[in-house]
Image 1: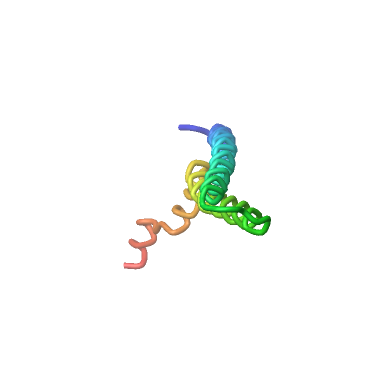
Image 2: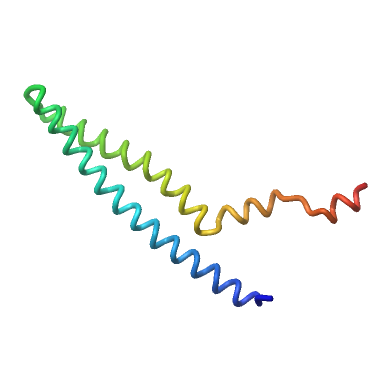
Length: 103
């Protein structure tokens, strides 16, 4: 049986790994966002002349959309991997002993 200190050390190690994984995901998401901006600007440039307003709107819209969409998925994975979801699941779980005493 693991002691509470061993469990705390194990949870800390799991959270640290989840943080490292999350940072790696965010880095790749930022790279993907930059590549999407480049692709969007290349496409728009091939269709005609670009104005400064169009370039700024494309950069902001594309970059923020990719970061927001992928970032929320990354946060969901981080929450699951770091153990934050376990505390919520355990809080909503009913004990069998409570059900027996009510009956």
